[in-house]
Amino acid sequence: MDSVTKIIFVIFESLFMDTLSPKIRQLNFHGLKIEKKERLTKTVFMMDLVIPQNLQAKFTFLAGQYITVKYASGDDIYYHDFSIATAPHEGFIRFAVKINSEKSSSNYLFNNYNEGDILEISEPHGRFTLASKPHEFRTIVGFAAGIGITPILSHIKHLLHSESRTRIYLFYGNRSRQEVVFKSEIEMLVKQHPGRLHVYYFFSQDSASSGLFRGRLDAPKLDLIINQILHTDDTDEEATLWDAVDEVLICGKGEMIKELANACFHHGIPKKNIHFELFESFNDDIYPQEKEFPLIENISINFKLNQNNYTTTLPNNRFRVLQQLLAQKFPVPYSCKSGICGICECKVVKGQVELLENEYLTEKEEQNGQILACMAVPMSDNLELNFDPD
Image (cartoon, rainbow, N blue to C red; front, side):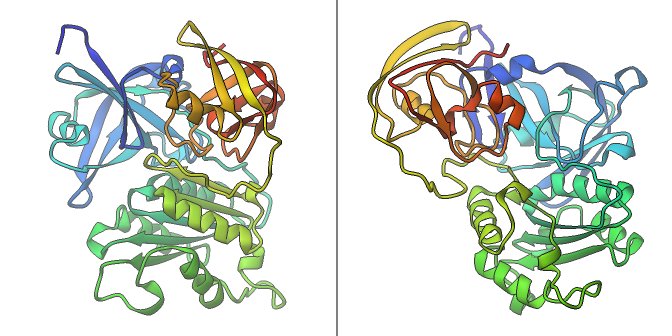
C-alpha cells in the first residue's frame, strides 16, 4: 500500500467502498470516551459512550437513530454505522457490535479500544424514527432479528418512558437462546411495564423451542402471530390486536424486511406506517414495482459528484438511474439500493424522474427536487443531477 491513507466507508457492517461518500463529508465527529465495554454474546459486544456537558446539544438524538464510528486500523480508516440502543432520556450512547470474523474490523475495534479510550463519533443521524404522540392510545409492533434489536430497543425504551398510553409487542428472532442480545434488559423492561410491553422470542436452530416459536420471522410466521397472539383485544371486544396496530418497526436482514413488510401491508397496514432499518446491504426492492412506464431511449444525463462533472447516455429507462450509472463504473455512492439508507440521495436540476418506494426522503425534500437514485426511473430524455450536498 502506498503512503496515501486508504479510506473505507462501511455501511451496515457489510459493504466496503473505495470512495468517501458525500454523506460522510456532512458529518461532524467528536471524541467521546468509552465508559463501558461488555461482551453480550459470543459474537456481540456493546460500548457505552459518555457525552460531556459541552457536547450535549450535539448529541441530542431521536429513538431509532444511529452514529458513525470512525477509527483507524493500520493504514485504513473505517467508518461504521451503528444504531443507538439507548433512549434519549438515558443521557448516554450505547451501541452494539457484531463480530463477523476474527479478521473483521469490528473484531479490531473490540480488541483495541477499551474503557477510558476515546472514539471518534459522528453526531447522531438517521430516519428510522417515529413521530411522538404522548396523548394517544397507540399499539406498536416490532420485529427484530439478531443485532437488529438495537434501534428497536431504543424505540421501546423511549415509548415506555414518554407515552404512557402506548403498548408494544416485540417479536424477536435469533438462531438460539444464547444469541439473544440485551435479553436481561428486555426482561427487566417487561417486569417494569406489565401489560404494556409484550415480548415473544423465536429460535430457528434451537431444538428446545417448539410450535409457533420455532423458525424464522417470515410471512407464514406473521399469519400465525396474528391468529394466535394478536387475535383478541381486551380493550375492544369487536376488534383484534392486529386491527389496533398503529405502527410497525422492522430491523434485520433485507430478505426478512422484504417478506415481513409485504406481509404486514397485505394484512392491512399502510406502507407509510411500516418502518424498516437494514443492518446489511440489500440490492432488491422492498415492495414490488406496481407501475409500468413508457419506454424512453438514449437518455442524456449530466451529473455532479464529488465536485466533478460527468456526462453519459443511458440506453433507456428500463433500469433505474443508480443501477445504470454503476453499470457504467461511475463512483456513485450507495448502500442498500432499496430506498432506505439515503446514501444515493441527489437533486434533480433538470428533467424528470419517477420516484418509486421511498423510506428516507421527507415530503418537503421531494418537493424540493431531492430523489434517491436507486429508486429513480428516468421520465425525460435529458437529465441533470447533483449528488453533492448543498
